[in-house]
Amino acid sequence: MRASFAAEMMKLRRRPALWVLLGVWFLLALAFGYLIPYALYQNPPAGMGVPEQDQILASIVPGGWLGNVVSGFPLFGAAMLVIAGALVVGSEYGWSTMGTVMTQRPGRLQVLAGKLAALAVVAVAFEVIVFAPGALASAIIGGAVDGPVDWPAVPEMLEVFAAGFLIFFTWAALGALLAVLFRGTSLPIGLGLVWLLVIEGLIAGFAGSLEVLETIRQGLPGANGGSLAATYPPTGVAETPGVSAVTGPVHAAAVLALWAMGAMAVSAYFLRRRDVT
Amino acid sequence: MTDTLVLETEHLTKRYGPQLIAVHDLDLRVRRGEVYGFLGPNGAGKTTTLRMLLGLIAPTSGTASILGSAPGSPEALAHIGALVEGFGFYPYLSGRRNLQVVARYAGVPAARVDGALDQVGLAARGGDAFKGYSLGMKQRLGLAAALLKDPALLILDEPTNGLDPEGMADMRALIRQLGRGERSVVLSSHLLGEVEQICDRVGVIQKGRLVVEGTVADLRGQAGLLVRTDSPARAREILATMAGVGPVAEVDGALRLTADPSRAAEINRRLVEGGVAVSELRPAERSLEEAFLQLTQPEGGVAR
Image 1 (tube, helix red, strand yellow):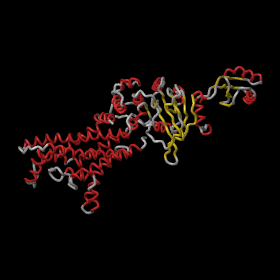
Image 2: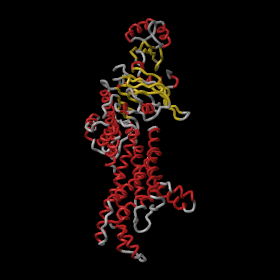
Image 3: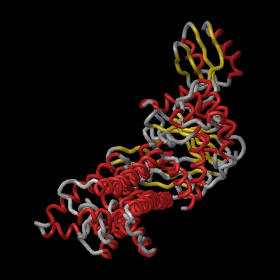
Image 4: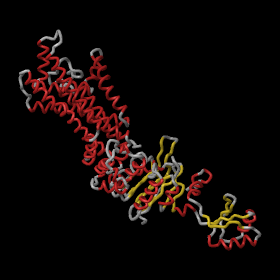
């Protein structure tokens, strides 16, 4: 597995698509997490009161750093990781490199394990690329507005980082699963995004009217990612898309872990059984 | 070449649904140190067979042993280099970097990469992006990847596809060189000249079945003589009376007979004495192409 992981990392480090995704994610997180809220705080629109302004400020100073950054994970960040997961596995089919890889020494499960381990590293990279600049931005804003500079405690930082990792890795594993099932990249990316951005939203929309849908919603990866992120307030200007406490944090973490393990197990099953053509 | 088998299949079969049998009851034997030609028309089942041997495709029934291990097992793959139709590389990486990735997967030192590039004549272009490679360069890179493990068994599927004539000649020379010594090579091809030039033994596959297996000389059949006369019917009568002269067939207006070419003078004398004017008499060897066509065309098929 170590050889597969090393080979995977060698490919990923030089893969332009991954750097583009990281760049887009960084810009999105910085723009919507800090630049736009700060602009709103400095230039409040007519009708915005002082409490709302204070709420914005609370989210972009060091005290709101963790909650502000992680609030982008369940929807926008998850979309990036679905794409990354689908690319890491699905491109091997598109480029016909699956055969090349599978005729070297490692077995199929070792190859998959190497890919999933590399996706875990990718998930960490997607966290670092927004947590670090987020910290810097909140420190700068905190200093600029003479606001309180009270950083979260280290255990809380680690907890939020772990929660973010769980959200990201689950979606990356689901992207990888879709790529194994459909043996490519385009359809898995499309389906993953439709699921995350449309289907989960539709279910959430009807969940209030139908009890069965509410029950289903409590088992969905998107809703549970949102619930996990909602554990760490404040969440910014208005309600952040995808962030809503549908379930408790323990339930959410357990459901996400089940989705991640399920995705890995099903991927392993299909990758092992199917012919590589 | 030794009698030790590096590859052996028994009743290897691959079905796709109830109708299509891609490979049927295939029994192959490849010995250590030989270059084995796997010959067959397009769609005969060559690539499917090779993919089964590499563990990429699961057989429907039958067994295969490759270097004493199961196909696709890490133990077997550690000693096999393969260039199979449809294998690809990462377009955004250079040729050299692609080989480094393959070396990582294979668990071989990255130091071997430059040697492999040099061996296939790609050393100067190793730093170029793979997406800019010509088809011939891609084939060479594929061979370089197959050589990284210094394999005991090389499996090459149509390795000269896409190469220009000079490239084909270079590739064949390289394969011949690689097949010397203890290494075994399985070369799949539909190019008869290629197989004839390179291979020690040949297996001919047609519609998923192995129709014949033997040396190139075996396939061509026994040596013979070609006789052109003004009276083929009379010549046939005379030849039929001669001991040691085998079946006579008419080819392009001439007679081809199975006989030791050293008896040409005797046959000529008997024909002339019998009143048959001989305008041409020369040794005739059935080409591999003729043998192949006879074996793979429905009316000429030989059941095993």
